[in-house]
Image 1 (cartoon, rainbow, N blue to C red):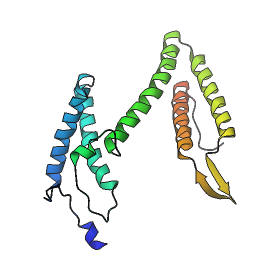
Image 2: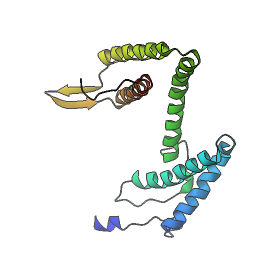
Image 3: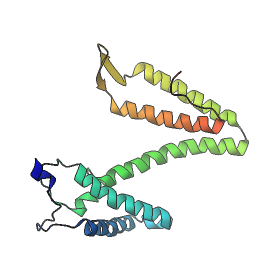
Length: 183
């Protein structure tokens, strides 16, 4: 096991890659990938730089962390920057897409609240969200226990809980309500 800690990044040719060179190349290739997807046309320079760094550093970290640490692997930027496979890029795009959907829906409600000065719209939305979540909670297990011990966790349902909590917390903040951890 001690020798596995000393394993180095290697290219297909077997050459060892220095970290500084790896990071520089990651920045170049991630910017190239973003430009291929025409993200430079819709992002501000600051957003593009943030995306470039997130993709570059994220893909390198994820490529390293997603492999069994005791096995060698061939380091490939093409594979790491693939937005269709098990890569940081795929995960980053997924999160952006998810946040975009939730933001658009919540944004419409907030625009209505601001334009019409109708905080009751937000109150109605949070109430409907709470009722819908309660029905979900009553009908779908999230965590199942057996003899007081956790037996199974449905991760997708747990993520829905977290997303709902995030939206409600934002709504509470806008309304001036202070959420508490226990009640």
